Amino acid sequence: MKTFLRELLFEAKTSVWKRFEVFLLFVIIASVIAVMLESVPDYMHAYAKWFWIAEIFFTALFTLEYLARIRVSRKPWTYITSFYGIIDLLTIIPTYLTYLLSGATWIWIIRGLRLLRVFRIFKMWWLVKHYKMIKNSLSHSRDKILVFMIFVVIMVAILWSIMYLVEWWENSTFDSIPRSVYWAIVTLTTVWYGDITPTTMIGQFLSSIVMILWYAVLAVPTGIVTSDLVNESRRNDHSCGSCDHKKHEHDAVYCKRCGEKLEY
Image (cartoon, rainbow, N blue to C red; front, side, top):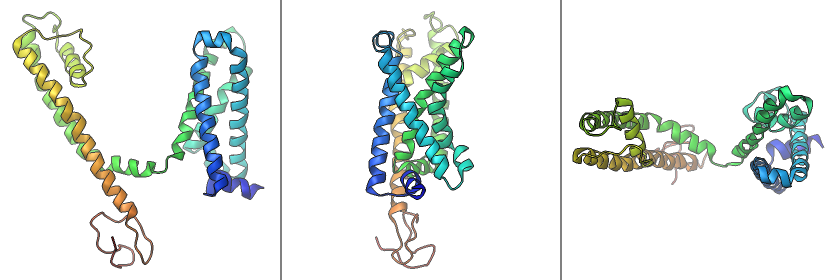
Protein backbone atom coordinates (compact mmCIF):
# COMPACT_ATOMS: atom_id res chain seq x y z
CA MET A 1 0.00 0.00 0.00
CA LYS A 2 2.85 2.36 0.83
CA THR A 3 4.48 1.68 -2.53
CA PHE A 4 1.17 2.24 -4.32
CA LEU A 5 0.58 5.55 -2.53
CA ARG A 6 4.14 6.70 -3.25
CA GLU A 7 3.65 6.02 -6.94
CA LEU A 8 0.20 7.63 -6.85
CA LEU A 9 1.34 10.82 -5.10
CA PHE A 10 4.91 11.29 -6.30
CA GLU A 11 6.16 9.12 -9.12
CA ALA A 12 3.90 7.18 -11.46
CA LYS A 13 2.33 8.41 -14.70
CA THR A 14 -0.26 5.67 -14.88
CA SER A 15 -3.94 6.07 -15.69
CA VAL A 16 -4.76 5.91 -11.96
CA TRP A 17 -2.29 8.73 -11.26
CA LYS A 18 -3.84 10.85 -14.02
CA ARG A 19 -7.36 10.28 -12.67
CA PHE A 20 -6.19 11.29 -9.21
CA GLU A 21 -4.61 14.46 -10.58
CA VAL A 22 -7.81 15.40 -12.42
CA PHE A 23 -9.85 14.75 -9.27
CA LEU A 24 -7.45 16.84 -7.19
CA LEU A 25 -7.61 19.64 -9.73
CA PHE A 26 -11.40 19.85 -9.50
CA VAL A 27 -11.28 19.71 -5.69
CA ILE A 28 -8.81 22.61 -5.58
CA ILE A 29 -10.92 24.72 -7.94
CA ALA A 30 -14.10 23.92 -5.97
CA SER A 31 -12.45 24.82 -2.66
CA VAL A 32 -11.20 28.16 -3.95
CA ILE A 33 -14.65 28.99 -5.37
CA ALA A 34 -16.16 28.15 -1.97
CA VAL A 35 -13.71 30.52 -0.26
CA MET A 36 -14.63 33.29 -2.69
CA LEU A 37 -18.40 32.79 -2.31
CA GLU A 38 -18.08 32.62 1.47
CA SER A 39 -16.77 36.19 1.48
CA VAL A 40 -20.08 37.43 0.01
CA PRO A 41 -22.26 38.44 3.00
CA ASP A 42 -25.59 37.45 1.38
CA TYR A 43 -24.33 34.00 0.41
CA MET A 44 -22.70 33.47 3.81
CA HIS A 45 -25.93 34.38 5.60
CA ALA A 46 -28.08 32.09 3.43
CA TYR A 47 -25.73 29.11 3.06
CA ALA A 48 -23.50 29.23 6.16
CA LYS A 49 -24.21 25.59 7.00
CA TRP A 50 -23.25 24.37 3.52
CA PHE A 51 -20.08 26.46 3.52
CA TRP A 52 -19.14 24.89 6.85
CA ILE A 53 -19.77 21.35 5.51
CA ALA A 54 -17.76 22.10 2.35
CA GLU A 55 -14.88 23.48 4.38
CA ILE A 56 -14.80 20.42 6.64
CA PHE A 57 -14.82 18.15 3.58
CA PHE A 58 -12.04 20.03 1.74
CA THR A 59 -9.91 20.33 4.88
CA ALA A 60 -10.27 16.62 5.68
CA LEU A 61 -9.38 15.67 2.11
CA PHE A 62 -6.32 17.94 1.96
CA THR A 63 -5.24 16.79 5.44
CA LEU A 64 -5.34 13.14 4.37
CA GLU A 65 -3.35 13.98 1.26
CA TYR A 66 -0.77 15.94 3.29
CA LEU A 67 -0.34 13.17 5.88
CA ALA A 68 -0.15 10.51 3.15
CA ARG A 69 2.61 12.43 1.36
CA ILE A 70 4.58 12.66 4.60
CA ARG A 71 4.03 8.98 5.35
CA VAL A 72 5.11 7.60 1.97
CA SER A 73 7.83 10.14 1.13
CA ARG A 74 11.35 8.73 1.16
CA LYS A 75 12.54 11.98 2.78
CA PRO A 76 9.58 13.32 4.79
CA TRP A 77 11.38 16.36 6.19
CA THR A 78 12.50 17.37 2.70
CA TYR A 79 8.89 17.33 1.54
CA ILE A 80 7.63 19.22 4.63
CA THR A 81 10.13 22.04 4.14
CA SER A 82 9.75 22.16 0.36
CA PHE A 83 7.70 24.82 -1.45
CA TYR A 84 4.81 22.46 -2.16
CA GLY A 85 4.95 21.00 1.33
CA ILE A 86 4.55 24.48 2.83
CA ILE A 87 1.71 25.24 0.41
CA ASP A 88 -0.02 21.97 1.38
CA LEU A 89 0.27 22.95 5.05
CA LEU A 90 -1.05 26.46 4.44
CA THR A 91 -4.13 25.03 2.74
CA ILE A 92 -5.29 23.20 5.87
CA ILE A 93 -3.93 25.07 8.88
CA PRO A 94 -6.41 28.05 8.84
CA THR A 95 -9.41 25.79 9.46
CA TYR A 96 -7.78 24.15 12.45
CA LEU A 97 -6.67 27.49 13.88
CA THR A 98 -10.23 28.76 13.57
CA TYR A 99 -11.35 26.12 16.08
CA LEU A 100 -8.25 26.22 18.27
CA LEU A 101 -8.23 29.98 18.74
CA SER A 102 -11.33 31.38 20.40
CA GLY A 103 -12.45 34.62 22.02
CA ALA A 104 -13.16 38.12 20.78
CA THR A 105 -9.48 39.08 20.91
CA TRP A 106 -8.63 36.59 18.18
CA ILE A 107 -11.58 37.13 15.87
CA TRP A 108 -9.80 39.38 13.35
CA ILE A 109 -6.69 37.20 13.35
CA ILE A 110 -8.85 34.15 12.62
CA ARG A 111 -10.63 35.90 9.76
CA GLY A 112 -7.25 36.85 8.27
CA LEU A 113 -5.84 33.34 8.61
CA ARG A 114 -8.87 31.86 6.86
CA LEU A 115 -7.91 33.84 3.76
CA LEU A 116 -4.81 31.62 3.56
CA ARG A 117 -7.09 28.94 2.13
CA VAL A 118 -6.71 30.68 -1.21
CA PHE A 119 -3.20 29.18 -1.25
CA ARG A 120 -4.88 25.99 -2.45
CA ILE A 121 -4.72 27.44 -5.94
CA PHE A 122 -0.92 27.12 -5.81
CA LYS A 123 -1.29 23.35 -5.58
CA MET A 124 -2.23 23.50 -9.26
CA TRP A 125 1.23 24.72 -10.26
CA TRP A 126 2.81 21.27 -10.24
CA LEU A 127 0.12 20.05 -12.64
CA VAL A 128 1.40 22.33 -15.40
CA LYS A 129 3.43 20.18 -17.75
CA HIS A 130 5.69 22.83 -19.27
CA TYR A 131 6.23 25.19 -16.35
CA LYS A 132 9.99 24.51 -16.37
CA MET A 133 10.18 25.47 -20.03
CA ILE A 134 8.41 28.78 -19.34
CA LYS A 135 10.64 29.38 -16.31
CA ASN A 136 13.81 28.78 -18.35
CA SER A 137 12.57 31.01 -21.17
CA LEU A 138 11.89 33.89 -18.78
CA SER A 139 15.29 33.34 -17.18
CA HIS A 140 17.09 33.42 -20.55
CA SER A 141 15.27 36.57 -21.71
CA ARG A 142 15.65 38.40 -18.39
CA ASP A 143 18.63 40.55 -19.38
CA LYS A 144 17.16 41.58 -22.73
CA ILE A 145 13.84 42.55 -21.17
CA LEU A 146 15.65 44.45 -18.41
CA VAL A 147 17.64 46.50 -20.94
CA PHE A 148 14.49 47.27 -22.92
CA MET A 149 12.55 48.30 -19.82
CA ILE A 150 15.39 50.61 -18.75
CA PHE A 151 15.21 52.24 -22.18
CA VAL A 152 11.42 52.66 -21.81
CA VAL A 153 11.82 54.19 -18.35
CA ILE A 154 14.37 56.68 -19.70
CA MET A 155 12.07 57.63 -22.58
CA VAL A 156 9.08 58.07 -20.28
CA ALA A 157 11.19 60.10 -17.83
CA ILE A 158 12.06 62.50 -20.64
CA LEU A 159 8.42 62.74 -21.69
CA TRP A 160 7.02 63.34 -18.19
CA SER A 161 9.66 66.02 -17.60
CA ILE A 162 8.66 67.78 -20.83
CA MET A 163 4.98 67.35 -19.98
CA TYR A 164 5.48 69.01 -16.61
CA LEU A 165 7.27 71.97 -18.20
CA VAL A 166 4.57 72.32 -20.85
CA GLU A 167 1.44 71.86 -18.74
CA TRP A 168 2.09 73.37 -15.35
CA TRP A 169 1.73 76.92 -16.69
CA GLU A 170 -1.89 76.40 -17.76
CA ASN A 171 -3.00 73.13 -16.12
CA SER A 172 -3.32 73.00 -12.34
CA THR A 173 -3.44 69.19 -12.30
CA PHE A 174 0.21 68.99 -13.35
CA ASP A 175 1.35 70.71 -10.16
CA SER A 176 4.44 68.56 -9.52
CA ILE A 177 6.81 66.12 -11.16
CA PRO A 178 5.44 63.13 -9.16
CA ARG A 179 1.99 63.94 -10.56
CA SER A 180 3.50 63.97 -14.04
CA VAL A 181 5.11 60.59 -13.32
CA TYR A 182 1.69 59.25 -12.30
CA TRP A 183 0.16 60.63 -15.51
CA ALA A 184 2.90 59.01 -17.61
CA ILE A 185 2.39 55.59 -15.99
CA VAL A 186 -1.42 55.50 -16.30
CA THR A 187 -1.18 56.80 -19.87
CA LEU A 188 1.56 54.40 -20.92
CA THR A 189 -0.39 51.43 -19.56
CA THR A 190 -3.58 52.75 -21.27
CA VAL A 191 -5.39 52.72 -17.91
CA TRP A 192 -6.10 56.46 -18.15
CA TYR A 193 -8.31 57.25 -15.17
CA GLY A 194 -8.97 60.72 -16.60
CA ASP A 195 -8.15 62.59 -13.38
CA ILE A 196 -5.12 64.22 -15.04
CA THR A 197 -5.58 65.36 -18.64
CA PRO A 198 -3.30 67.60 -20.75
CA THR A 199 -4.97 70.68 -22.18
CA THR A 200 -2.26 72.19 -24.39
CA MET A 201 -1.62 71.06 -27.95
CA ILE A 202 1.95 70.03 -27.15
CA GLY A 203 0.75 68.10 -24.09
CA GLN A 204 -1.84 66.23 -26.14
CA PHE A 205 0.81 65.43 -28.74
CA LEU A 206 3.08 64.02 -26.02
CA SER A 207 0.16 61.96 -24.70
CA SER A 208 -0.23 60.41 -28.12
CA ILE A 209 3.47 59.47 -28.18
CA VAL A 210 3.25 57.88 -24.73
CA MET A 211 0.19 55.85 -25.75
CA ILE A 212 1.93 54.65 -28.92
CA LEU A 213 4.91 53.57 -26.78
CA TRP A 214 2.59 51.10 -25.05
CA TYR A 215 2.53 48.91 -28.15
CA ALA A 216 6.32 48.71 -28.05
CA VAL A 217 6.27 47.96 -24.32
CA LEU A 218 3.80 45.14 -24.96
CA ALA A 219 5.18 43.78 -28.24
CA VAL A 220 8.95 43.76 -27.69
CA PRO A 221 9.07 41.73 -24.42
CA THR A 222 6.41 39.41 -25.82
CA GLY A 223 8.53 38.81 -28.91
CA ILE A 224 11.64 38.21 -26.81
CA VAL A 225 9.92 35.69 -24.53
CA THR A 226 8.23 33.97 -27.48
CA SER A 227 11.56 33.57 -29.25
CA ASP A 228 13.12 32.07 -26.12
CA LEU A 229 10.12 29.77 -25.71
CA VAL A 230 10.63 28.47 -29.23
CA ASN A 231 14.34 27.92 -28.60
CA GLU A 232 13.63 26.23 -25.28
CA SER A 233 11.10 23.97 -26.93
CA ARG A 234 13.64 23.03 -29.58
CA ARG A 235 16.25 22.33 -26.92
CA ASN A 236 13.83 20.02 -25.14
CA ASP A 237 12.81 18.30 -28.38
CA HIS A 238 16.36 17.83 -29.68
CA SER A 239 17.08 14.35 -28.39
CA CYS A 240 20.13 12.41 -29.40
CA GLY A 241 19.21 9.18 -31.18
CA SER A 242 22.23 7.46 -29.69
CA CYS A 243 22.22 8.39 -25.99
CA ASP A 244 18.79 10.10 -25.74
CA HIS A 245 20.36 13.21 -24.22
CA LYS A 246 18.13 16.30 -24.43
CA LYS A 247 18.41 20.06 -23.96
CA HIS A 248 20.74 20.81 -26.83
CA GLU A 249 21.11 24.30 -28.26
CA HIS A 250 18.63 25.00 -31.04
CA ASP A 251 21.44 25.24 -33.62
CA ALA A 252 23.43 22.25 -32.32
CA VAL A 253 24.63 19.75 -34.94
CA TYR A 254 26.27 17.14 -32.72
CA CYS A 255 25.31 15.72 -29.32
CA LYS A 256 27.29 17.38 -26.54
CA ARG A 257 27.36 14.12 -24.56
CA CYS A 258 28.30 11.40 -27.05
CA GLY A 259 29.27 13.40 -30.16
CA GLU A 260 26.78 11.72 -32.49
CA LYS A 261 25.16 13.84 -35.21
CA LEU A 262 21.69 15.04 -34.29
CA GLU A 263 18.79 14.25 -36.56
CA TYR A 264 16.05 16.88 -36.89
